[in-house]
Length: 174
Image 1 (cartoon, rainbow, N blue to C red):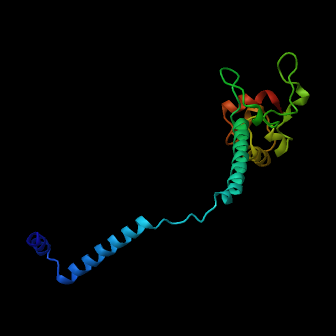
Image 2: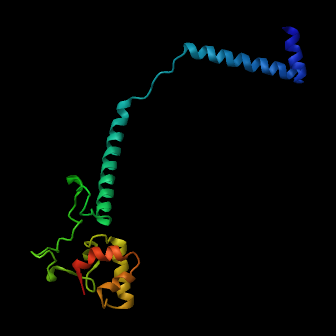
Image 3: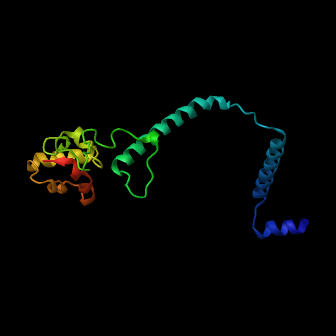
């Protein structure tokens, strides 16, 4: 065994100083390993300390989830065929314009339509699929190019395509 060990160290060309260093490192490793078996670190942290932090995190997470659900419902309204209704807890009054009411024929009442040439940012946000950014773009387009001459001209505003125009067309006027 001694010859095998000597042959192994000789073949790797380990100097006597390196052998001593390896022996010291292995001894320290064995000493620390055996000490860890008998020594158990104490738990200095109380889990009760984290309960208020976790409660605040959960509260803020719930608020953020509700806000994301509200924005999702505003920008991606539920389709009438084949989809489930949103949960009652996440339905807000901003999803549908309060000023738009349907008459008995199913079309909107002309006096309750939103005038896109005169509406301010907050009125435009009431339109389905129109958020603060697109409302600001509509106002900027109106300021730069003048009043809209046709309802279809609102498609020139970046962010309003055929699908969004189809959504808002029944509830806007000039």
